[in-house]
Image (cartoon, rainbow over all chains, first blue to last red; front, side):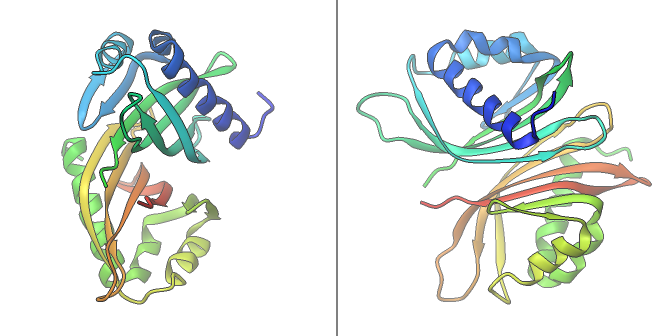
Length: 124
Length: 124
């Protein structure tokens, strides 16, 4: 893949949150067997457990707005760390909540999968 | 190292912020040549550049308070991702500022060094 890491990171972030907001079940394809999600301190291992958690969040619709994206190569494996801050709106009457999220992407067959995913709301 | 990852992560986080708050120059020993810091979107490569940035922050004294620590194994290299949220107080008259920070630790000679470090203030 010839794109520079920041371009890959931005493309991944766009894809991830667009999928989350329009077709949450489609996120399952981004994870592999060893993938782990930590969501507000709770750990989920593997695509099935992760998809089940994301699908069971207590809102049907949401909209993410990304504010910052930082990216670094993660070491000799050819992976990338992506660090996102933004807001999530979960209902028309609600206030947006601020969040931070970390993804560790590892290469797989010319693309990337999510090895690590850690999500935290930033309570104000 | 026989400790479980969460114990290692908490020990690292305690050590990192205690060193930051009492002997900031001592942080340089945690980084190696390929280490990268992204501080509020600015990238610094290698221990000298990282230590120079941390030493030049516009406050002499500060106090970090850690609120959450999440940790995951980062893949086959034996590394660990550590995701921290907390507050930093930079002067007796100031309000604490909220921050999020990600560390990617890689093993080296029975211990760990910081391969990746990404810091963001979470403006309210």
